[in-house]
Image 1 (cartoon, one colour):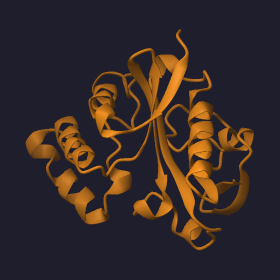
Image 2: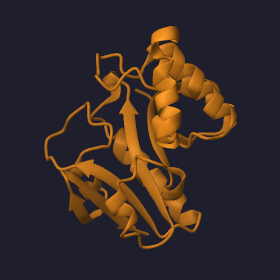
Image 3: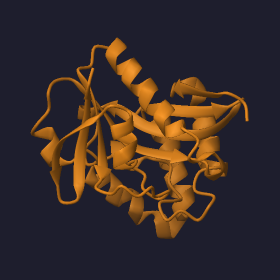
Length: 195
């Protein structure tokens, strides 16, 4: 394996983003797939409109079409991981205010200032458990600090067990990265790293 490189998503990398979700994401039968990570940046009305098109156009085809449009409009934010020139992972991370439904309501009540939220990860099956999610978190935190953010948050399900299907990332992943739990509710924890 070559050195893994983490790059922020830019318009120049949109084709790589689509290539990752077309060919490497969810290839292990993961029940979260197919997915193109569009929902975090859509409101409930947009999501329902998209879901309504699944029967007519197919699930993967519809999700991809929405992703293309959202990428064109710069509505999807995060980071791609690369092994050489091949994208092998994705982390959806952006300003908390850019998300409509993926940041828990109780987390919004306890903010400590300008915050980046990490709402999901997808790592290609052959690259899991190799430290890529940790590398994503490190990059997110470094960039957040450089850009004047006060904190980075993740919203893990309360479980110490590693689960390849848990797109939010496990609790222990955030703990290992120096995040502290600041709240919990209904089986989910807000884990925060003050920068």
